[in-house]
Amino acid sequence: MAKEAADIVLLEKSLLVLEEGIKEGRKVFANIIKYIRMGASSNFGNMFSVLGASFLFPFLPMKPIQILVNNLLYDFSQTGIPSDNVDAELVEKPLKWNIANIKRFMIFIGPISSIFDYATYGLMWIVFGASSYLTASASNQSHWESLFQTGWFVESLLTQTLIVHIIRTRKIPFFGSLASFPMIITTVLIMGIASWLPYSPFASVFGFVPLPSSFWLWIAGFLISYSIITHFVKTWFFKKYGVN
Image 1 (spheres, rainbow, N blue to C red):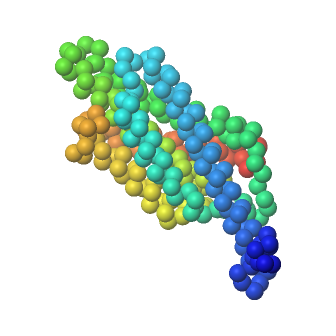
Image 2: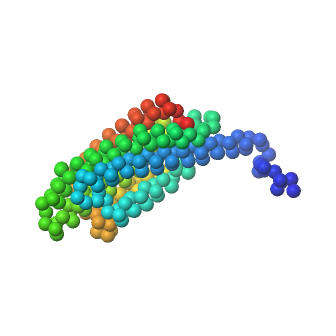
Image 3: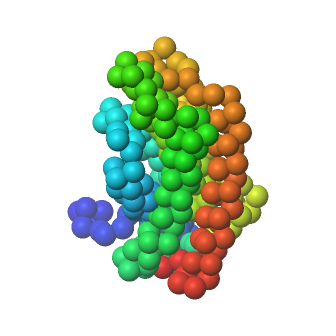
């Protein structure tokens, strides 16, 4: 009767389990905040990218099925967050729910992804010749449209997935703070799938076409630049507004 009425039941003969329980609770809350920040900033940036593309180009920047696949893969890459490592300083004292801070984070970090989305638009349209859509015959227009959409699909998914490792910590990612093994596996797996899909047997099903080999050099530069810029903006943000 006493056990059923108790608010807390200790499974070990030590009050230290209370401390461990508090730490675990703080880790869970910290990871929840991570997920919300990642999702909010990513979606906020994508909104600007899609909105601008609808005015700039005579076709959709991604087909509906490509958007669904992109979102599905990105969501899968987030499944490692519940088991992610949490920096020690985040569990030293309780975090607070601060929706205003999350909103500010979304506003500052989200548009950075749009910068590289528009850079990818220019890359596909000018460098890789997707602008030929305007003068191509009706039978060839679909190729240039698919090339453009494939390029943005890959860039969008790679940058969204990689940036998870930048946002998850206040420290320098990979060096100052390393994600948990499940999170590393899920993000690496999704980035691998994103790179493989344009050359896979399923490419035509989703409207993808093979990308030129030089495309990957450009994307490598975009990923490095995006990571550096986001890290510096994130560092400035946390110094100014704190983690709460």
